[in-house]
Amino acid sequence: MQQYIDEFINFLAVERGLAGNTLLAYRSDLSKYCDCLLGKGVSAPDKVSREHITDYMFDEKQKGISATSICRNLSAIKMFHRFLVRERFAKEDPTHLVETPKLWKRVPEVLSQVEVESMIRETKGDEWQRVRDNAILELFYASGMRVSELVNLKLDNLNLELGYVRCIGKGSKERLIPIGSKARESLNQYIGSVRPFLVKRDASATHLFISRLGKKISRQSIWKLIKQYGRMANISKTIKPHMLRHSFATHLLEHGADLRSVQEMLGHSDISTTQIYTHVDKERLRSVHKQFHPRA
Figure (cartoon, one colour):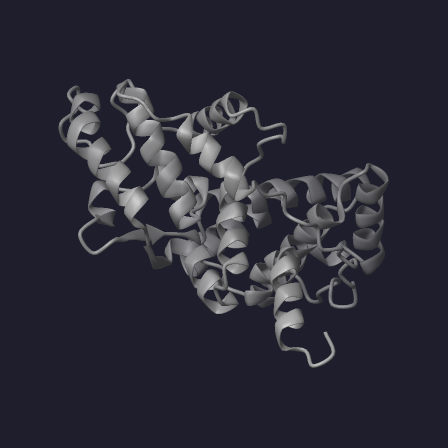
């Protein structure tokens, strides 16, 4: 079955233009699925039945895998079997009667505005690392970018005069995100005084955020510094990936931003993905109800 996975991943890369991390996730999910099939003696696409797929999903549930992960895995499996039929590697698609498990909408954990501000306050200082880290946190919170998008930013992706950043997201889709005065101020300080010092080993470096070794900063380094400043700010919450991105979206909606604008800034292709943030806006909805309902 591995040869078919290779063909499918190549199709996604060439025809769909999916990002490298997405391709890795698809390959991982499908390899696990095909290993399970091989364990049951199924080595050809035409031998896969609906029962094989439902059994696999049930086994995953028994292992304690979350409904979100199972649904993501099933999505990859469905795309894979549709591809096999289209390319005539298989005659039938065994997934067409398999229903997606009901998902519960998990509330994204966010930082409060006070917590975000306290984290950013901890980056204040004249040392090169604090100046750089201050620019990273300010831009991260101002734009709501993914970590992978942040580390891959190039210097020429910024237009500080007009106040926006050009971001290349999933599937190489480009979007423009406005950034405020605080982020612009921090970025100007970093670009003017610290970045030239960091790139002295490689003057041709084009990435915006640079490590102490003069290379593009890594995603792991970004999360280490976020956790570090979270501890310094005495934040008791466990800092998780995307927490600043979640906070960006939540705080915009709390202050009256419309969902479509937030969707565009986050780079979500489907607005249903953005709607997960709407539940957190209870206080604003209560105040609107109190202000406008005739019997409030």
